[in-house]
Length: 224
Image (cartoon, rainbow, N blue to C red; front, top):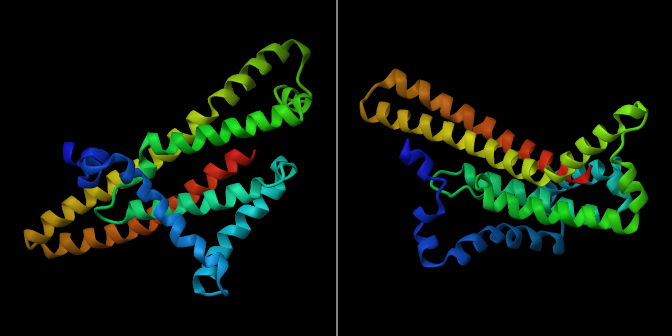
């Protein structure tokens, strides 16, 4: 079990031991790979990226976040960035940055704080009014305001922990199945090897779906 959980320790990477800053900066490589496609003629990569761009843009327009001009320009690249990082983590022998709380909290806290400060600056009345749900009994108002305030304050924590926990759980299962598959393969147990192979392939596809869903949920909760 120590070997399984050590895969989430960045210190096990030789690049991290050489330069921790360079190790985390490598996550930005996905941005450099995606960005040039927006400045060239439409190609296969552009059409693949256009689908998640449209999905997130439509979602932002359905929420109150549509009143904040430019927010869609922030959430759409963030959506693509998290998807790319999640997919990289599914690949064997690649460190999963989105399973690390340092990475997810570094995304969740600044974005949440920026949106809160922006709302409080440009519309303080609406920001305070959002702490009290409409139609609630008068005697419940103090408790509801307290609950909504706490819920708002812990949102960056829940955003970060949700993404890291879901990605970590999936990678642990993939690692466990991979270990048993390796044992069965070298033991020449053909039925077990075939069974575990299909389990591994199926769960990998399932985990790729989770990568998409978690990226969508992360950006969706930021836009609410």
